[in-house]
Length: 478
Ligand code: UN1
Image 1: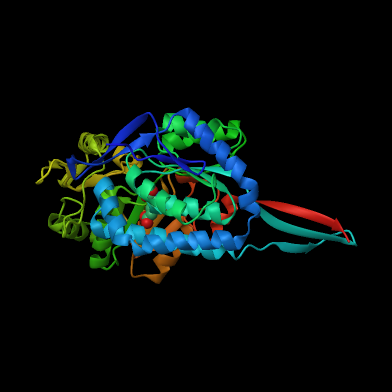
Image 2: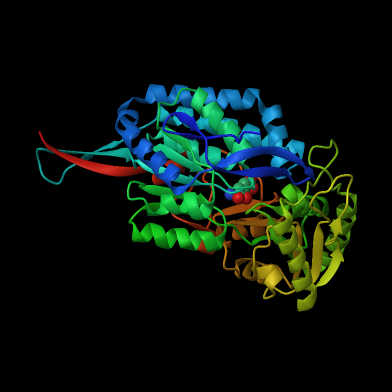
């Protein structure tokens, strides 16, 4: 089998090294073989992007609009097929995968529109006779490093604004999901991006990522992934004076108050904690529940968990697909043991499951009697594991919700306008949800967090322009 190639400088380029892409629902199913670039190939991509930048950035917004529109339209037209590929290589259910694919298409269409809305400001000077204008200009070459858990939506929400605002792109997808990245890149290439404007460089983080972080011609890095990698990226970008944007995860609280609608709270918790196999930085991994509803909530949630169907991602009826790979599954299992060792009570799930095919199946796990200072309540597990922390009342629940190193999303389930309003104002997070799961966000509004979750300007919506452009202030003596 020939490995699927990288796209560098306007050509599909083979590599000497390649990696297999394995279906986590069935490890006997090889999705494909994908090129792994070496440092040289990564440097070529950066140089091609640099060479393409002057023409692309000045080539006009109609061209950019038309290309992004074609990309969005094709993704939407092929949503089922692309969704199947995504489900097959990442392990999301077909419904989740098609939903994510639609989101990616819509993101391209949103930014196609944004190409046409580039505006500046004319500001009066304090000195008579002088005109001042502020405009936005692209950064130049940007390196986009994306995670495995949203194989098409996260690349879309980095690539689309990068191109819309006139940057050239070197896209380094996660090792575990090259198939979707390759399919997306093929669409972008056929939509007519000029040579060098968009480059796909699949390969190891230690090789391709490293090349992006250290090359002087890369002006900006947008990264979504782990905290540990984020820290390394921040240090290297600071060293090279690159602009950077990091999105690194969370330990998102869902607060359930005594006056919550129990059905709504249980649905929010099950969706937020376990759907997408808990593999979302927006997952609700801490369920902070006040005393008056605690026992009813735990009972109803464990009942609901019994009915959740964990199986092959592509099987109709599956609600929770497999964990993405053996390493992640082992980490999840380790945290289940850590939770038990810390004295939390495992009331549901946590065990590895076997299904009709060899895959990384795990029963969603729920702990009760967790304390907020336990590791299972402080560290991001990135799997279907949630911990219930009991709170006396709203004030304690809010304090617990904010007592975390992260600050991506915080949710509250309540029927009280007073508590909802207070929580929206006082939750120390970039996003707040009232009677909604912490995960599952719109595609046209800012996305991002505070504290250890995020660094730099917001992604998505109109706010994406902050990262992908730089402001110029021009003075003219009239
Ligand atoms: C969502 O919850 O809809 O890696 C999006 C992640 C996030 C995306 C979450 N960057 O899970």
